[in-house]
Image 1 (cartoon, rainbow, N blue to C red):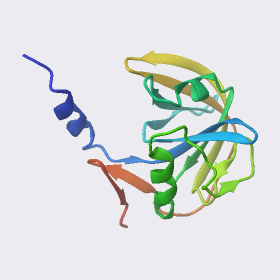
Image 2 (cartoon, rainbow, N blue to C red; image 1 turned 45 degrees about the vertical axis):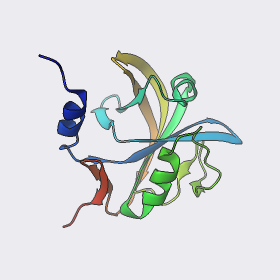
Image 3 (cartoon, rainbow, N blue to C red; image 1 turned 135 degrees about the horizontal axis):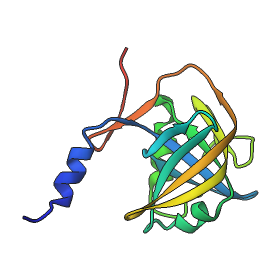
Image 4 (tube, helix red, strand yellow; image 1 turned 60 degrees about the vertical axis):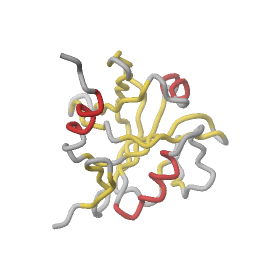
Amino acid sequence: MSFDARAFRNALGCFPTGIVVVTAGTSGNWRGITVNSFASLSLDPPLILWCIAKTSRRYLTFTNATEFTVSILGEADRAAAEAIATAGEGELTAIELEECEPPAIKGAIAVFECARETLHDGGDHVIVVGRVHAFRHRNGAPLTFFRGRYGKIVE
């Protein structure tokens, strides 16, 4: 029996996720990557995780970064998510940013400033674990992803 990778991906798409942008790099050369593989890992110590494909053009930027920022996007941030998700190096020049290092996406409903804790092999991805050293949040509806499409939560 052969394994149908496309059917597997479609089945995984049945799980709705939020959308985050992870930022890293150096001052004046910040980069971003749109991610839906973000999760809380531990409250004590405060750890989060996210995953990056080993084939990503941004792989070295993010796996070499010792600091990164995670911005949880709200439904008004779809344009930023799409712009950063396009092929390329993840330049943030056309994106409104909030001042911190690395910068956050302006208007994000939550922001986590992190130090890289560890990296773990995860097949064709690497799992990045970050220790949260600062965070903030506000009210707002999240941007979601479900079956290959952006969406929103309706209360």
